[in-house]
Amino acid sequence: MGFLTDNTSINTILGEGSSFRESIKVNGNMRVEGDIDGSVDATGNIFVGERARIRGNVTAGSAEIYGIVIGDVFAPEFVKLLSTATVLGDICTKKVRIDDKAIFHGHCISHKDEVEFENAQNASQTQRSVLDSLVKRNDLTKKDE
Image: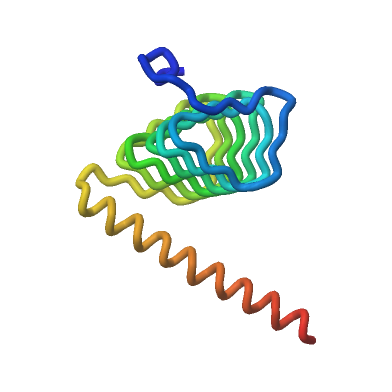
């Protein structure tokens, strides 16, 4: 709970037992203890609690994950996966820490250099967009059959 002990206020909290079924954009920091079926975009930091689950991409300044994220994590400052964390998706950050017993299945892009980081992030997003459009096109083709 590193950044929660700092002098950082949390703007948005989704409590345990709560659920949200759309993408959400937060101006500031967010703490998630419930379930989100949709992407999360926070201008500040995000904390994903041990019993929390996010099914969608996470974009924030930094991410501290104890729970489950099924989607990509984009956090330029840092990403921490603690021992109870599960991330099924790619991570793009400048610094990453993955504790023992954490589960991570995906690709990790980590560059300290700002220019290299931006280039890698743009390339990753372009590749993801191309793959998504191919999958959608394939799905439409199958529906026409």
